[in-house]
Length: 249
Image (cartoon, rainbow, N blue to C red):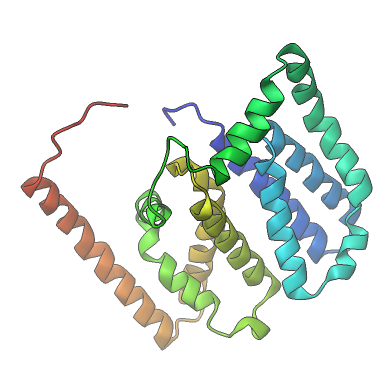
């Protein structure tokens, strides 16, 4: 809330894109409208932070459709008109700024986007497990319930999962793996996976309150143990090894 970053807008419009797609996928009424709204939202996501705004939703939707073996859904997705709508929203700004600044297109699309993902010469180099720590810290206190939520969601096996659960798991997993594989890593990059993480935990709590099974109670117990034990240990560590450099970057 105190830092100006584009990732907040990106997370919003990626979430809106995926929501509109899934509603269009799930119901026949107004399906075309929902799909077109998904393309419009993707266009706004591209305006927010470039090609990643359409690449992420495309990877998630494509993986979901393949997993569900619903390739026939592609015929209903108005891909042609959808791309026209997406470009009509996103392209004008990039065209105008490229005309104003001749080096902008190469700098932004090649160096900042492709280079940040593939190049080894980047400023924000972090270990492969970096986003695991970011997720566990940034999602507190619900991160303690996230492992149990994922296990609970996958408990019935891939052949018996609901469309909703498949979509959430693919959304969460692809965003996490995608950014973990990138050369440049920043904590804000994985904001688009917080909505599916929240929904996975919400499903766990919903099922726990509605039909508490022994497995759910056990999962809750282990989650509460970590929730109660780890924060005091963290405070103890800070007491024993206080940070010495508190200067801002």
